[in-house]
Length: 436
Ligand code: PLP
Image: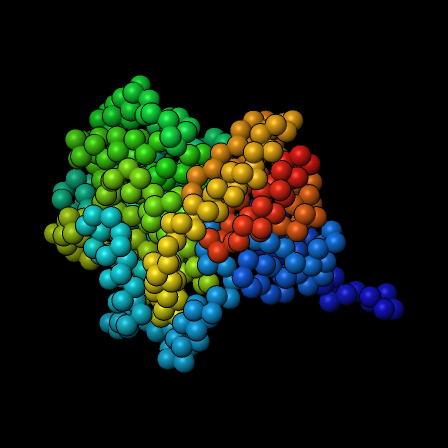
């Protein structure tokens, strides 16, 4: 900048490092995040060029959420329209059309009898609510000893207390808290491979674990078909079916965490539908609002709700201030209609095929262990911990925003990404895998 004074971006970066705590970051900050000035379609516009690029194709959908891209006219209009009515009003004793219509539509499109909808603020909170529902259900039935959760290793369910307790305890991000978190029951991680036949020994292991711990288990909670932030692994829907059967046989509730997988990402509207399974409780978030604002939901069956209603405390003791936020509800409703009004399955398939074609080149690269694609998700797994700085630099130089971590370079582009941009994302993933 002229006269040696810091540029606007330089000042922002300095203030950011000093004051803004980023996800999984030290304070004061040790890196300079890129400054996003605006975004539209699938492009993020930076305040200043980084590695020669001012515009980046978004390969991340802002962590699974921006499925329609940014500034979609339909969602912008829904937000404007709702701002002209009311952006927030308390949900205790009051209700409003956007939340009612959203809840009814979610109940309609979700699998089975998931009829009751608790609208909350974030994915992690929706998992907290799911756990609370399950524990309260058993308390109401006079079985307070059923208060533990079972999951499988390699999972991720969020960063608040109960969700952290069912994240992968070893490779995962929350091993720091072992000893402080509630102690849960962990089955082995499901064998990898979406299309693989279910491994009978592993199915037997799941049945045995549920049977052995049923007396103390309130619920089993897992991510169906895709383990996301815990490791980006795809597994057979057969394991989700096995858990449903084991839970039914031994009197345990099944919670499916569809926060990452929901709203079409894996090729079905909800990943549980690959397995033909209905959970007792289901969590959704992320793409619920098309990534516009924070909102999540916990859905449950009449069995769970009526069980809770039989207790000495017949109400679900949960009520966040921003529950059922009208602005978020209106945008979520519009996002869901927008998704369902088009042949979204064809779009997800097209993005997946583009990733698969472009990532074929990655399979032969040194250091690449495995390439996998499911729905509109692509993963390049390395045989070493990725150098995040080098991999990000390579992707950004190729004009694409990616956020590699652990031993992976991965992408889950917005469904509206055209073929040329999908090819750019795949090429940038190859570059990131090579450099990282
Ligand atoms: N569950 C799964 C499967 C997730 O992928 C995430 C977020 O990555 C969460 C829960 C937590 O959601 P949030 O980050 O909105 O709290």
